[in-house]
Image (cartoon, rainbow, N blue to C red):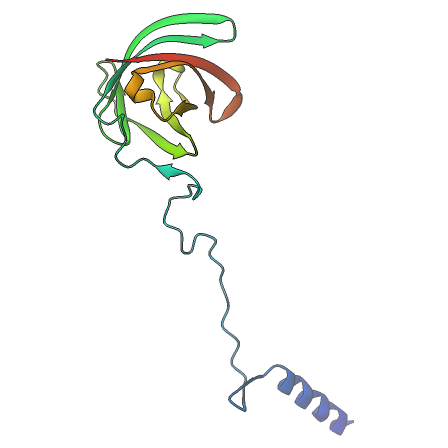
Length: 159
C-alpha cells in the first residue's frame, strides 16, 4: 500500500512540474493577463474615426437659431463660442463645456456635451465636411447620446 501511495505522489509531483531546458521546475507558470487596451492610445475611440485635432470650429462663433423636436419648433438665439479644439461656452455663461469633432468617411460628427440650449443633453449630429466654409448647419438631426429616442433638428449660422 505504501508503494502505491509513493507512486501516486511521484506521478502527481511530476505532472505538476514544467520542463525547462531539460530540467523540471515546480515553480508555477507566469500568469498571463490580457489587457484589452494594451497598445491603444486613442482613449477608446474607434480607429476608423479621426479626431480633428486642429478643427475648423476652433475660435469660431455660431448662433443656434432654431430647434425642432417632433413638430414643435422653437426659435433660439444662443451664441456658441468654440474656444479651442475641445471646449465651448454658450452665450455670456463662463461655464466651459466640452465638444468633439470627428472625421469619418465623407462626414464630420459634432458632439456637444451638456448642451444647455437643448436641456443639457450630450448630443451628436453628422455634418458634411465643408459646413464651416458655408457657415451654416441647416436642420441637422442631433441625437441624445444617452437616450437615442431623443432626436431633434438644429439650425446654426456662423457669425
